[in-house]
Image 1 (tube, rainbow, N blue to C red):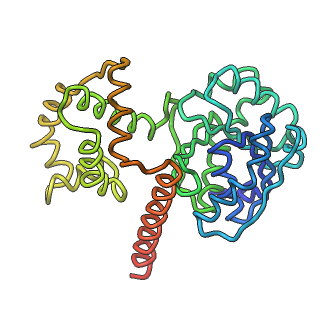
Image 2: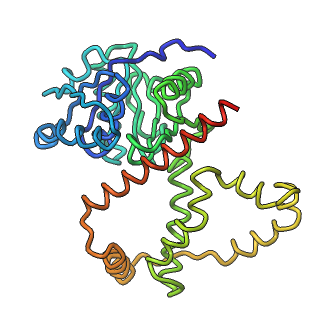
Length: 309
């Protein structure tokens, strides 16, 4: 495995919203240098404080990013550029082209796009092969997944090595796909959850509980394929497909398509706000981060125990 270009230490963070803040906290916690820029002066003004909050959630020693006043200033000396602009094809096309024109020629540019395709957002860029999708799962400072796609597999592999070295768990897409992997899987579950709600099968609170108290526990340690492999008992996935495969087709045939109308929107809002029992969003974010940290720590302990066996 080649490690050429793995030691990227100077990061340019373009976009100081939620994802840029979270990524910056994580990179700083790993000893990397981050210079950030956002065209919104308010976002720049609040950036350092909000990064510090995410670093506290990480339990990391406080470190401060550099906040640049121009795009060119942020890109100076960058080895890796992380673009976090809103999900607009035209906006990303222009921004990525501008980044490549101003950044050092050897810099790699990654886009945090959650759904857009590489071939769409790189049109007009001087060197589209040096732009790679690197979609983190929110929040990036606590969730290890990074989904990578680019046409140059050697460059993608360099990023795989880099993200692994700093403690992330990257996956490589073999072909581009709207929504990549994790968001497509999440969207499939969300669609069925909305359908169950709209059909009156269960409340928001019970639908969420059916996930967190059931399959969600397994999904923290096993994906769908390994889950069904163990679901086949001693016969594994072979036994499952032979004996229970048809049951999946039976369920698939009954999956629904919710109607996204004002009535459903109102119901979702009402029941979500009811289920949270008056907890504020800052409190919910803090509790999510605390529990994500605890899960990561528990999984890390298990890995260390297995390594010592």
